[in-house]
Image 1 (cartoon, each protein chain N blue to C red):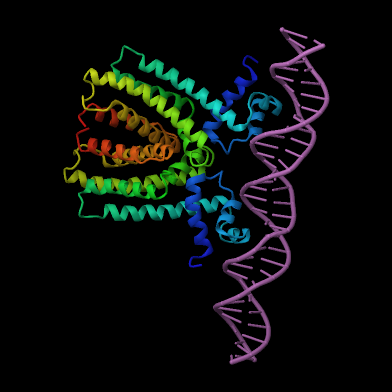
Image 2 (spheres, each protein chain N blue to C red):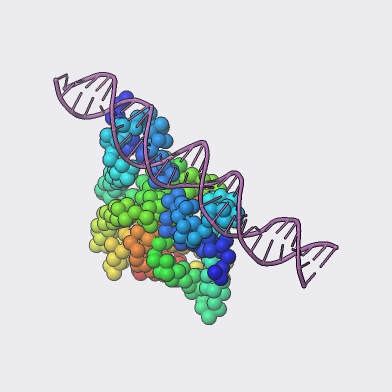
Length: 193
Length: 193
DNA sequence: TGGTTTGAGTAGACCGGTCAGTCTAGTGGA
DNA sequence: TCCACTAGACTGACCGGTCTACTCAAACCA
């Protein structure tokens, strides 16, 4: 076994939480799928909630890698870099079978019931939006988007609409809503508001 | 008691499913909150899944009432009517404490796990989108939106982005994302794509 | 009209199964 | 020797769902 037990559990958690959500994922099922005894699980994680939180941390590591790759691609214009991030996310969704975004899924399921998750997930969105906003700020300076546009608002708007498209894409198991959303919002963003 | 037991259960189901989602809502909790014995519940509903489906039906009745009230308001332009529907929805969300949309919540939680729910909820979205599309078609004929715009695609896009804004609004318990989304998408829709 | 029947609806004890989490014993490499 | 880690039996609580007993008002009929 190349990876450690902890790694194996977190890795499986990424796909199982994406598919099943939080409440429908049983610890037993996770353990069976990864051939892990219960003792190991509770050696590394203090509770199911702690586990899910660490899975979210891991998810965010991947998200930031995607942000690094896209927003740092100087071959593209700033606005193109922002769009590239969403396109990279779409490719990730494709590899997962168009199950949408884990943050959106857990956010919907848990934000009415668990304030810890709600604020953690909102913090994730805010983090992502912040990095996109910095990129859009540069796009504004370069004249790619109107001078009166607010990069932070626009970044939040793009991210929120993206999450909605991801939900519809999850329901349909189809990427079309994602592309439609990108075409519409990015072409609108270049014009005066 | 003015309403019937069945009514009372469905009514409570609307708010409890919105807040807790499906898996976190126990039958026992529902019964306790409504002072209903278990026998009555299983007299009216064959299972928890059947119950949730009927709650969705009831939710859709309210949605269609909202669509009737807004899309049928001839004092507004066709595009204004479509926007009015979302504004009415926002008022409903406010009354519920900004917990977002039940379809979005259940869709995210269950579509990875239960195909029956997934297709039912997708059908709901498709229904709503269809009615908005008819309205946008008239907006197109009246020249409110560009002639080359596709009303069905635009309606789906508005609905999807709305759902994303509703998720963010749920996380923040704040209506701002909803209004931002409406301002952006409706002003963009009036310009050529 | 008055007595009987019937069944929709109420009531909650109870069922097997599964849940997250605990506990003790053992293992193997440093 | 020591301790991080593996291993899984076990716990009590709770899950959705079943079952039987009961209530009571409407339907029925002499």
